[in-house]
Length: 297
Image 1 (cartoon, rainbow, N blue to C red):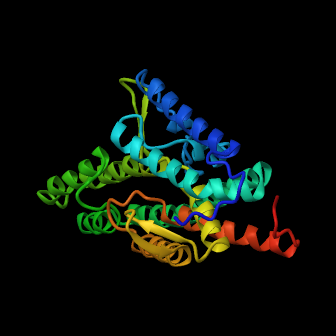
Image 2 (tube, rainbow, N blue to C red):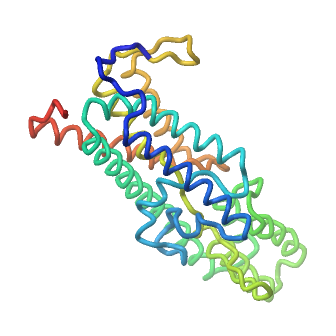
């Protein structure tokens, strides 16, 4: 990134510094509680509103959660990439706007990203739920196979998904079995909604219980604002390839849109949350410009 920083520029301004500290503390708490069998993402990660884990506070708290308590490598890189981008681009914005304005911007982008993600998630999950309801009206082995192929990608990524596919092979050996037809509905219900293991009393999560975590929505808002306000600043990809910020941000937005529409099997990235962060950043910048607050000191 080209050095255009004015005198008095803080390399680690107060809000960026404290956001990084808070995110690190949340990850440490996540692993500490995870070692005791408590998954903090169940309480603070963002959940679909039909999930038994959903809480209204998650719209805010999910921004401080990263990765998984069961995967150190994933968590480290998820946290590092978000915090590095926050520092690289957010420091410039906070120095220009001041702490209060920057924090307001950051939180609104994160909240906006969450709302966009919930909207897309709601559409996807309601479509899936409607497909399941339709299947229950005609639970044949052929319809079961069609449902699996459309809604449970291979290779399976969860035990319930693997069980659902394995059940198909068993049912195909006796396609006229009424009991297997009835059991297939239970199998799919468990995959979608989860179930309680009565031996342990623990709720085994289904598709609708999956949590979304990360500061990416807010960070993408910061990234967009930097490209919008400093469009011709050079960013050096891989430290060697110079690219103007406006082209880098534009390409990144198209990349996220493409991947979000593709919705590839095994892709667990919330692409529309990233785009939501960018969208709310654009809206907020326009509102501030109309109020004639172009200089945010």
